[in-house]
Image (cartoon, rainbow over all chains, first blue to last red; front, side):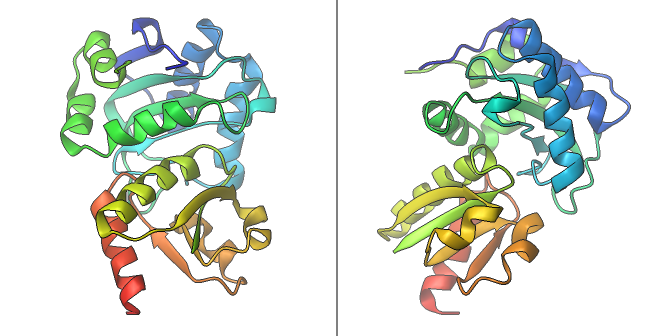
Length: 147
Length: 90
């Protein structure tokens, strides 16, 4: 797989006041790990402001992302779980507890990563474990690389 | 049969939905090509069926293509049930 998920891309049980702060923390992890430029994080937030909270694609789960040209540098994800869930304004899937920020550098090269995410996240037991994980290592174990 | 999944940018969440639509189709034994796209390109893709989140349904209403709204992209059962209903003509 052409991406790496390690502890430095994960933060568990984070305290936030609102969804913007939550997306920013996930975005900061992308910047620190050199997956994206700072403007990518602003773009992720602006897309929700412009297009609505459609990134809340599943119960308690948001997938913020922006365009490759918004400052993405490498393919990858960062994962943030919240101590207390926050509302993004999605009618059915709020409140959000898990945020997986996603970078892509073109239309194709992140397909393998997305396919892996779909496989892991469509399993309800996996998602339960993600929501209740107490530390970064547990998240890496659930979402990390597998053959 | 060409099925299109739609999201705001056409490369993040629509791709996630595409994966689970393929999974659902496989378990229903239905063969179809599934592609993903953004809202504004949906009209030029000539799809037979569109699947999208509730937030994009209004922007797709003007198309002749039937649209199915999916609430939970990670719920393969929801996708399966809605596809099954569609293919039965309900």
